Amino acid sequence: MIEKLIMYMSFPFVRYALIVGVLIALCSSLLGVTLVLKRYSYIGDGLSHVAFGALAIATVLNITNKMIIILPLTVISAILLLKKGTNSKVKGDASIAMISVGALAFGYLLMNLFPSSSNVSGDVCSTLFGSTSILTLTGEEVVICGILSVIVLIIFIFLYNRIFAVTFDENFANAVGTKVDFYNLIMATIIAVIIVLAMNLVGSLLISALVIFPALSAMSLIKSFRGVTIFSAISSFICAFVGIVASILWGTPVGATIVAVNVVLFLFCQVIGKLKR
Amino acid sequence: MSILLAKELAVGYDHNPVLQGINFSIESGDYFCIVGENGSGKTTLMKTLLGLQPSISGVVEFGAGVKKTNIGYLPQQTDFQRDFPATVFEIVLSGCQNGLGKGFFYTKAQKQMALKNIEKMGILALKNRCYRELSGGQQQRVLLARALCATQKVLLLDEPVAGLDPIVTEEMYQVISKLNKQGLTIIMISHDIENVKRYATRIYDVTEVRN
Image (cartoon, rainbow over all chains, first blue to last red; front, side):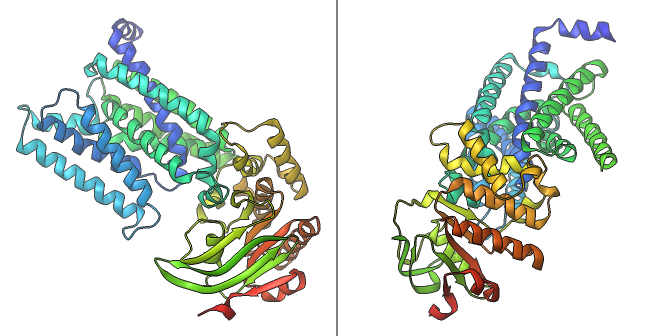
């Protein structure tokens, strides 16, 4: 078993994939705390379906660097969703559900109408559930993921105090002159970026697991916002690492394995939390 | 000296005024109460005063060195705040956010101010406790301490005793009254007219200006 692991680790792209996977998990868990607390858990899911639709468009148009289409479309949807959340005729959860399934349907429709390869269902499956093997991540993707993750981390650390203020009480923050709309915009953008990045790793359908599980695990045990943020970052980091290594050893799908590890940790934290009370 | 002046103010949503013809002037040191039944437009008026929503017509003016962003606001609690995982200290410190300016992190002085206000509210022992584990009255004290971090002069309180039992309500009124005697101007919204009469120096009834 160890030998197999060492053998895999000798390939540079496996090492890169591991680094990137862990970084993405870290970033998504940081924002997950805010999303869960703001009652926006499903936004990750909605946006990932938008990203799926965008990917279908990019595939049909036969663009080599698909990020050029996927990233802006997802960012725009994120901004619209977060902005519309409070004052609109279609309420928050309904608008997310609407955009989510709409994009999914159109994406699948496009991929079937204009098939880019002979194996459409295989393509769709890997977009929805992530690469069947981590070995299919390309070097370019790894570099982009790495850079964007580091940027997200830095932004989060510097805006931590304002993110807390806006998450806890938008009205108060607004009243004392914090630019709530601006910070919501930044958060929406970051979330969209993370989701596009995470799509390579865990696939569209499983992204919200990376966003919500670490936060929920942390919230069942920890009592301070800082503690919750740190715990969820560390637990997401460890889960991603364990999940990727396990998927290498047993040849399981990467995304599903990472999510499974997260679910186990969540259940474990719930039990501990109940016992502590 | 006038701290806040409303002139021919009309407030409401989507160009439909809920209240109009509002005229008042709040002086430094006042304990000014805006009363009226539920749904009479009190909260809308307060949000307009704070600039959280635009007025339909008329003006709101601040004076005597008070800026809109230097008002300590105590909003009504939202549902999700009740189970928010944050310590008392973290929440009170967030009241200093208008002092962040272009910076990113709170200074030592701001952290000390947060501690001082926690002490002032008599909840120093709860400093590291989780907000969601506190009683309703304790939570209000936390939010009041946060409001104090944002202001030196004016407190704006939106139904500060909503949902509290009679004993805690009385304590809350005592705390607010004490702050007023220490020189803070209090602007409070309430439908609890009986109690308000005992403390407020001026009462403004919105049902009388309606239409």
